Amino acid sequence: SGRGGRDRSRRDHPPSGISSRANAPPSRHLWVGNLSHSILEPDLTDHFLQFGELESVAFQPGRSYAFINFMNEEEAISAMKALQGFPVAGNPLRIEFAKA
Image (cartoon, rainbow, N blue to C red; front, side, top):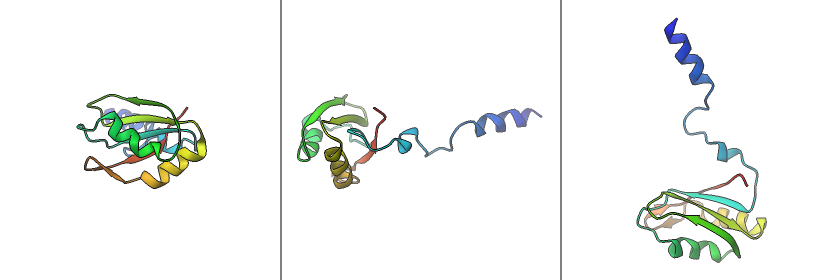
């Protein structure tokens, strides 16, 4: 019966690989993951600036992700489509809509 408790708690959590971000609706807010630890903020933001004006960038050196917020949703969607899997500093970007 001890095993049952562990099984029950496992069912309460989504299977690994399914993130809550994957369910976020399209928005101006992008989560950008799989970043190289050597990347610098200007190297990352330059790729996104070609799609439109950025409201803010939350980036910490050494982290493998950043949050990039556009001024408008269409530009964020365009950037996501164009840069999904795009290699930056040797790593293909993984981009999802972040919850605002």
